[in-house]
Image (cartoon, rainbow over all chains, first blue to last red):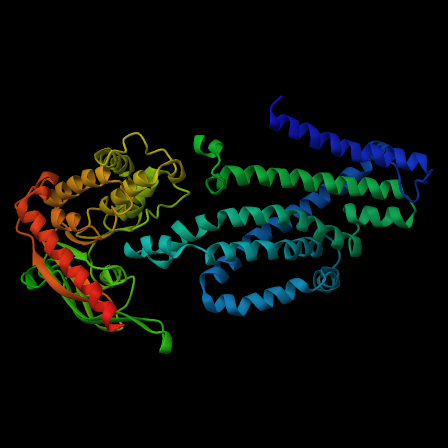
Length: 257
Length: 283
């Protein structure tokens, strides 16, 4: 068995072991399902009530992806702007840090006031939660571009746009993709916050209603759905990251492609 | 055509004017107490198609002169003219090779060498339209010429330092520059690779006749390649001697072991040692 296989086996065994331990401990100490349901109960609930959960999961995924896409568009634009101008950097950075320090729960009611309850506030909350890591990383990637690489372009009398497109942005790509993995999970958090506060659809809303009915297994089923969606999107973006920015990792798989 | 194009105007009007001209150029890095004067009232003229080498102790402002002529740095005082215009405005194709290979790590070797063709007119327009296969062929030929045949699909991190430096030289030459700036491009190579690249460089210069400004620490390299050698002194940097290299071309490495050649490098060495000693007594 090669070391990589062994590592994979060990990590899989530990993850499964965690859920087994959870199951066993709940049984051993007789913990009621209203306090902490066992993994088997959560899975059963999920399976039995899947037709009911499904539309909510789809709604949450849709909202998150729209918010995430908007976050990428505005995040890259803003990050490029901040990263390529000293003045923009000095002005926008404190504003950005201040804005990102505001608890987003506090912002949702404002969105509801402006746009009414429903999908729009959820999309916007997802966007503002995921935009911060994207902006910061794109800006950092641009700002840390080696001056020597820019000199190569400047000696060719390249315009600022040429330098940005041929050196700045490609150089910032590893930073950008690293931020996407964080941002996509943040987008989920944003969506669920907004759904919990002001929506009648989505996993967040489902969990709200379930907990007010003391239907704890359903709450946990909702959490499980969110966790799985989050992991799946994380994996997808990790995969794209290796494909696109393998040069930074010096992966041989990248060189073969 | 009634009005001449800007390029032809430059050629005809300034037929006797030097292609590159530094006039009383001073350059200071930093401000106030921290200010370091890198270059002191320097004058230098280079005729079109000439090959000039700049030698001198480290920190004497050799690289600074290159950066001034390419417009990467602005002179604190004085003027830098290229093709009769102040630097920056001139329609001249410039190629530059640096001490480090400075290849873009996300591009394959071929794409790295292609970069100037994507940026510099008139290739820029052709690149956008159709000529990519033609460009690719040209790059393959150029890479083969410096001994990199078959490596164009590799990424920079898959190659050795010497190979990267060769590729960087290709990138400086691919757009047929009228002005070629070489900042110790052979410095990090082993002796035999270096000599091989000198020969390639000489051949390229003899066929295309770009105006070349070479910065180097290697006196043999300067005497082998250049028509004229400028010796610089450090702190403040200035040119203290200009020597015309009389040897016929094409020159060979074998020549560098004969009397006249040895005498020349010996004399240059004495000048540079003097420039260093001078610096030490001043400080």
